[in-house]
Length: 433
Image (cartoon, rainbow, N blue to C red; front, side, top):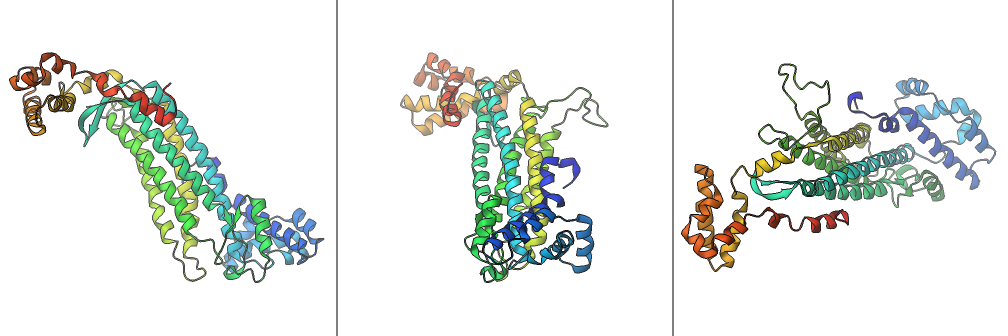
């Protein structure tokens, strides 16, 4: 995490204050249930609840000596609570606190990211309907293919982000488990009802079977979900970067008054937000691999996952949170140039209608092989000589014989390609307006 790409709302989740508060609540709740079971005296609970506190600087100082963060934390808490502190952590192991807390933090982070995604979806939806009928060039391999609308491009972004929202909600549900099962997960020194009590109070479900740690396939799913979302952000960003190229200029990032694009070239207006998002997406994806490698731990536990998660937990969620907020602003303020879209569409002088002519010829009784030959022969004159495609077809006696002049002219109608835009919008948004 660096400040440049960090929002305080997400960073707060990973600050020591929040982490230790969660630890203290887990320990206190465990004591409450232990008292109900008669394991510890009930009169200790008000003392633990009221006096329980910690000092972060003191925890750091103790950890520097004992080399164990949970012990350092418990020692600091004991200095506040007094003699009753001997009942804290009864029958528990460090992973009970660490893993359950990590689940809580990942849930908190997921809630922020869900809010971000909902915001992005709202912005995409608004722009999609704004440009539902804005005709532009569809491209495959970067080459002109057939007409689409800019609204349809946005609709694909919406559908993909909507799937990402569903993925993230599932990942949130699957990460929301806690474990208070003691050493090697057998509950030998702590009753399973303690786990149930703590999890209910913390908004989690008990892990069905823990091996002293919560199984890391849950975490792998979570971080892989973040990686998929990041890849979707990059897909949108790369599209905008292409559309902003000088030779294309169908859309561009908003360029604010006083903004400067280059220290050397005063004319520059660069797609810096999209490029930044491309880079941030690479970072978020990189966190998925160590999360996957964390799944295979030795026997009932080791701590090879620990250093990884202390890094990727904050970094992946903070980075994705920032990226989603930046993407939202980019989409809301994106400048669109419909006239340039039409100019680019017409740049190849009618070639975009080649498939329609091909199909017309086959419908008229020409074999597909001959139809393809006729269309391609005339299309190559446009590529190589700058000819007009419709004029070349009208000058081709074979094509005219098969279709007639009027049918050829009718086939150069943009509306033919756009007749199902409303159908697609209804599939994606449930409405066409």
